[in-house]
Amino acid sequence: MVSFCHMRMLPSLPRITAGLRTRGGVRTAVSPVSLRLRTTVSRPACFRPLPTTRETAGRSSWRAFSTTTPPIDGGSSETKPSEGVSQAEKSAYDVLQERGFIKENTEGVPNMLRKEAPVSFYVGFDPTADSLHVGSLVPLMAMSHLQKNGHKPIALVGGGTGMIGDPSGKEEARQMMTTDTIEKNKQGIRAQIEKFIDLNDDKGIMVDNADWLLGMKYIDFLREYGSLFSVNVMLTKASVKSRLDRGMSFLEFNYQLLQAYDYLELYRRYGCRLQIGGDDQWGNIVGGIDLVRRLEQKEVGALTFPLLTTASGAKMGKTASGAVWLDPARVSPYDYYQFWVNVDDRDVSRFLKLFTFLDMDAIAELDKLQGADLRQAKRVLALEATSIIHGREAAEEAMRGAQAAFEGAGDVLAMPTYESALPAKVVPLLAASGLCSSKADAKRSIAGGAVRINGEKISDPDFVVDESMLDDSKALVLQRGKKNKLRVVVKV
Image (cartoon, rainbow, N blue to C red; front, side, top):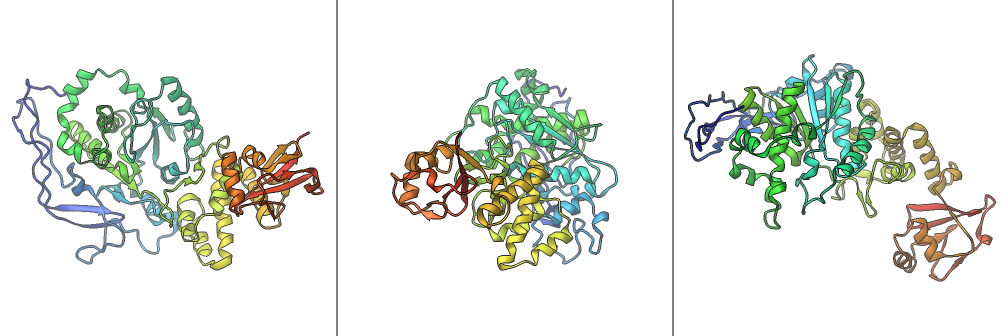
């Protein structure tokens, strides 16, 4: 425990005058940046100053440059993968870099991941629901690549921090959850994480920060760690600045302290040397790096991913009907497949690299497809991405159903099916089947010419569907828009 002499503050960090930083694989010089964290510097006799490095806690000194930025002297970069290296010889860092996972990293990370010794690394997941969604796939896929290359993943499910909620990227406070809800959510998330990483035989572990946070005494935490954080610096973090005009509770403001403490605790318990996460987490991760350095005199690292949007600018994993969940009870394998097969043409190559395990040579061949042939690359993307979450059998069934619905091939029995008593009015049928969110939505869709039965446009909201419209398989096809079809069969 760090002891304190009455009310005196810890010393300020020295000013860093120059250094190197790394973004996406290229080192470049850093302009002088003041990293002073405190304005009062009365030093307790009990405090031993920590060694300083070029990578001290300020965001500017940690940030990395994009791969399009050349080295300042035109020379080579330590983080650039060797040309001509075979896939089997590539390090974990090389794999992540060529697939587009890396936005930024601290300077030592490339060499850390290129050495033969395994590195323990962690990713945090807040248990805000009993399922993850497509937005969580980037860290999950990165964890899998790192483990396949010999490194040890630590999946941290925030049973403790989840009781507060991460404010990063949020416009308002999260809804408070009970401990029972958090526990239920943890179990659902674990099952999905295990589709990506092996948690058996000490190859990887899943931990809960409730184990060390919930029993912590508030005054003890403030005395031991509170003076190591500057409110001035905390206020500059993006997760805080974005909320200042709308308001942020003190509860949420504390989140970055707890996340920083998680890194310290994982270092102490499991030798964790690397935290990975979305780029909106950079400030919180750097806080943990600084805490480990101050208290353990050790250097640990950070690696962040780009916050993905689609080519159209939409947030990845969001659709008009909501989040694309990984749980089949929330989003069926068929609908999950449809999400991927209908991505923007401009996203196909990038998504093949990020969201499938196809090797880069196979992806390069698919990249050659143009125009109508690009549909084949989309099928491969959808099949591979769906197989990871739902298994190959379910993915292939989803593919056959999609082909039957939209290509005149495949298996009509694999299409999503809804049972209904007939005759039935079309508006209630659209709402009950889920093709429309409500009767009002169904009426708007009909008025807009978006509803068809067996390919014939329906323009009358009072239209009655009857058995005369059934085909030889005793079914009809109900459609809303170009991409939403289902098979309606008579309810027995």
